[in-house]
Image (tube, rainbow, N blue to C red; front, side):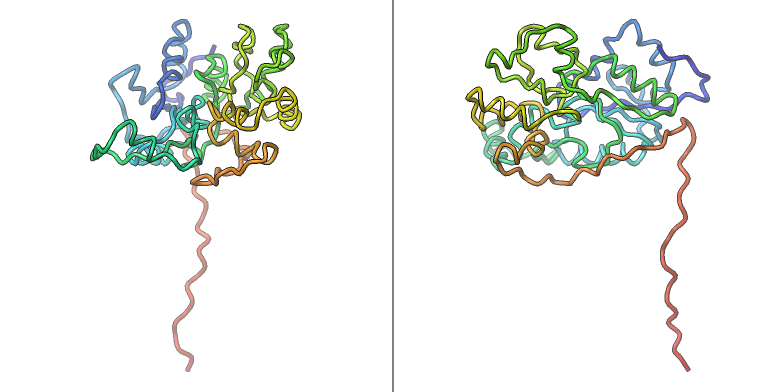
Length: 305
């Protein structure tokens, strides 16, 4: 696992949860054999599920954030976490892509659906709005997808971040893992399986149990999207069926990526996610140096004589 460090060298880490089932944070707590190693490797400053002792006014080296953003209070908290953290990691599919609660993002019927559940109740504690993933509100440095996350991907990411190194997770699709596990291809059985366009890392859990992939790991970086869409259409699946499947866990993010191939119009996100860049490793305990101001010198207002 992770080699222990001295207390002074331990990176400060926080775990936070917003709208979701809390399954990703629970997946970490359920790592009984490795839990002590995790807490010995980093200085956990906030993890409400593990301890009532929190330090939410401190600077953090790494913040792991689960869940999508659904209220103004959550948005304020997320902005504060982002401000205090050198690195922010989206933890789980809800944080990365929006999850099932964003399955109808862009249809414009959020108020109608919300009213069906809550009626005319006035909400005074927090102002709700349609749920969106983290990167439509703040900058996200790394993504650990899954519903819930895979413990070994989390261990890998935490180990790298604790050492001040960058994180690169699986880029190949679920289909590769199906091949390794010698699963029979469900697409050849005319089932709507999203394995070819979904990121691997789950060890093809669903197809290994003869269940088609539902895309909960989000879009794969190495995916032949056009071939997948053509294959599904050849199997007589309509664009509506394909979109519904893509939206189930990928939210609008999946549909935006495949919109042109499906012949549909995708809505513009509330805040366009910043393009991913290769980050320099962050060394635990060392603050970033602020670059000198580049503001232009003030023009002289003295009148010419």
